[in-house]
Image (cartoon, rainbow, N blue to C red; front, side, top):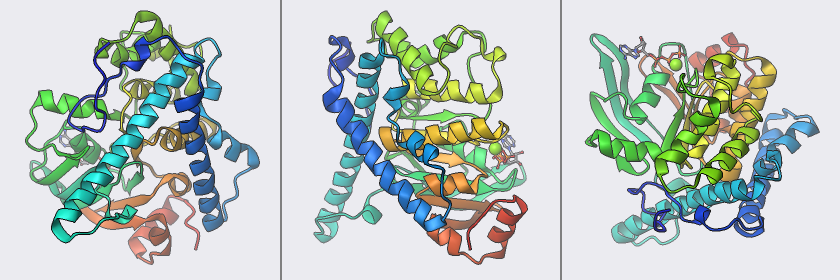
Length: 368
Ligand SMILES: Nc1ncnc2c1ncn2[C@@H]1O[C@H](COP(=O)(O)OP(=O)(O)OP(=O)(O)O)[C@@H](O)[C@H]1O
Ligand SMILES: [Mg+2]
């Protein structure tokens, strides 16, 4: 395995040396991170429930707070717990690094010392972004952001540019004007090689999963682990098994993607994304086109990942109830521009007829 990395340096890919060490019993780092995540999830979810009045059955709440590692079999749990604790720790360090960086910038400009959440620099942002395809203007002067460890939900009608926005963030599409920052870096001028490093930190879960069709589910999840070049085969197999169990796909490693349903493909895509130990995950409509139960499972999983792995997330969704549980901020794209960008509470209070029509037409509940 490679040398230990200084994880707080956002320009370096994430790697680890810890997995080459003999597996340790699972408490210190792992459980402290999980416990911290679970307690944060509890208070946040309770707060959302109080705000919305949308009481979840007790089972749901328990499900969301349940540590991810509890879904993993005992034989692989130590290695998997270390793997996810390492990812969570790296994300916390990255959050702290962004906060410190913000503080340093503020110190040199106006002498301020302590930064509040509102003042912490975004982890991902669009600043005055415009994008056209030929004569078709898709995005016009679009700005929004998400801070480290937070979740942004993107809403808007079909064809408004939600998926295009995610593809821009991944560097698959270039903007015509404006600035795009991902993991603190402006990506406009990056080479494909540099962009690949950014994609190790920010991964995307596509609507159809975008799995490699010719290799098995297990090999799909193993792919990012093998790419690192610093893990032994038995560790790779253990992490693959554990990640698949974590996303509800236990024992499916030898299946081919073609044999899976849409929801199952998305679950595997989430496991593959987690194998890269990302700082941020972009999800394109993760809960649509699947049955309500699968939608619910995927929604809970995304919520648990946010809270327990401290992932920064961007979620394209039409599901307002899901967004209310998960989102710190929401952006509503309309007619090429940003019709709304703000917190869930501000969204709920908005009297904008366009917003209200969208949610009523979609038969989604926006509490009044
Ligand atoms: N590679 C491309 N070349 C040309 N036009 C494109 C390309 N990708 C997207 N578009 C156009 O950009 C617009 C926005 O597409 P996008 O896929 O972002 O919509 P969306 O908001 O994700 O919609 P949906 O909710 O249906 O997924 C559409 O008019 C689409 O035809
Ligand atoms: Mg789309």
